[in-house]
Length: 155
Image (cartoon, rainbow, N blue to C red; front, side, top):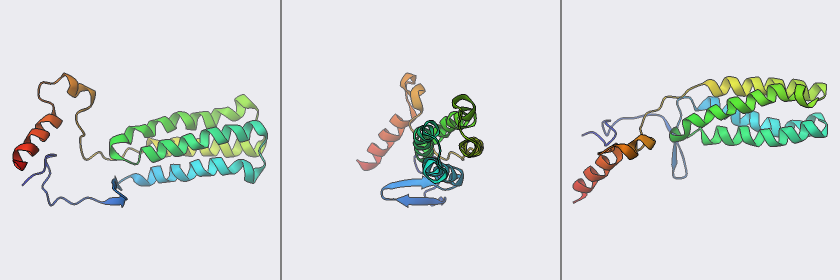
């Protein structure tokens, strides 16, 4: 028997269980690397004695990289990884625009390039969730059909 998503019920895929949330593990490694880079961006000013402007920049951009990478771990939010391309580009160009010191410049440029590279990796999307905004204009959207089928099976 097939599930509502068109897969056999005995279908197996690699998942990681975090409390009640399931995360697909097929190309999750790129986002995990971006999480580590985001933490490194936040810690770098204290370890390398950045000036105040460079430190403030890293304390703003680091949490953004970290947040976008964490959000994009889940399959439904996979496209959020693209926001890190913008944050990575800012890390590459901000040392020249804001006048950082040598250590801050090297750190931010290398971090920015790495964030961009790891944000380009696209993970496989296995399921469709509700059809998005276009489902509002359909007569019989996929999620409504699935709900009706589930109701008829439970009755």
